[in-house]
Length: 273
Ligand SMILES: Nc1ncnc2c1ncn2[C@@H]1O[C@H](COP(=O)(O)OP(=O)(O)O)[C@@H](O)[C@H]1O
Ligand SMILES: Cc1ncc(COP(=O)(O)O)c(N)n1
Image (tube, rainbow, N blue to C red; front, side, top):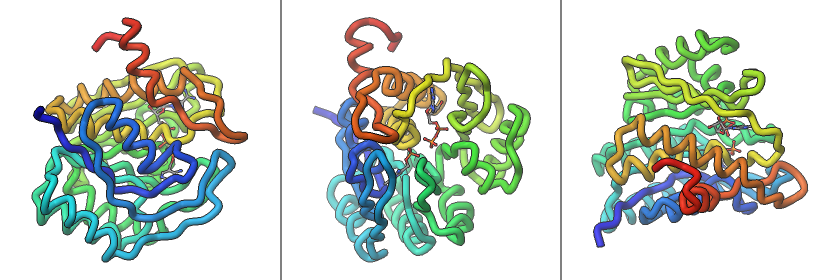
C-alpha cells in the first residue's frame, strides 16, 4: 500500500483538541500516515492553558532526525514552536532533509490568551521559516503581528497577504475566524497571483478550540497526497466547517471540534469530494 506520510511539528495539548493531538486525528481521518515532533508540552483543557513546558532544541532536533533518517516526509506542518531556538532548529532540519510541502501555522496565542510563542521569536518565523513555506496560514491577529499592519477590511487582508507573499512564501491563507464579517466567515487565499475567498456562515458556538490546527493539518495531509494548494485549502475549509458544525460538547469552556464530522458527512453524501 502506497500511503503518504505527514509530519506535525507542534505542541502537545493534553485536552486533545488542538496541537499534536488535533493534527494526528486529522491525518488519520484523511488516510495519511501521521508522525510528530513535539516542541512543548502544554497542560491544557477547554478552560485554558495551565502550564507550558518547552522541550530542549536537542530533543526537537532528535525527533526530526529520527523521522528524517527512516520514515520520510511527503508534507509537514508546524504549529506551536515556542522559541526562536526551536524555530531555527526546525528550519535547519527542513533544509537538511530537503522536505517539501511545508505548511506554517504561525501559532502565537491560545484562544484563552496564553502565549504559545515568545515575542522575539516572530523574527525567526519571518526570516527562517516563511521563505521555506509552501503556504502560511495566520489568523488575523497573527497576520497583523507578522506584517505590522492593522487588518480591518477585506482590502487590508489582501494587502497583508501580498506582504506575506513578499516575505518568500509560495501562498497565504488569512483565516477569518477573528474578523467581524457579520454573518459570514471569510478565509482569504492568495497564491501570489490570484485571490480566492472561501465564505461560510459564521456558527454561533464556543466550541472552536483547535480550529486553526485542524485547518493547517488538513492542508498538509492533502498536499502529501499530491493535491494542488488551492484544492488542499478548499478541503481544509470544508473539513473545518464540518468539524465546527457537528458539535461534540466536551468540557466546560471552549470545546474541541469534531474531527470525524467531515468523513461522516461525506459518507452521507452531504459534501462534494
Ligand atoms: N464561529 C465560526 N464559524 C464558522 N467558522 C469558523 C468560526 N470560527 C472560526 N472558523 C473557521 O475556522 C478556521 C480557523 O479560523 P480562525 O479562528 O481565524 O483561526 P485560529 O483557530 O488559528 O485562531 C477558519 O477556516 C475559519 O473560517
Ligand atoms: C498546543 C497548542 N497548539 C496550538 C493551539 C492553538 O489552538 P487554536 O487553534 O484554538 O488557536 C493550542 N491552544 N495549543
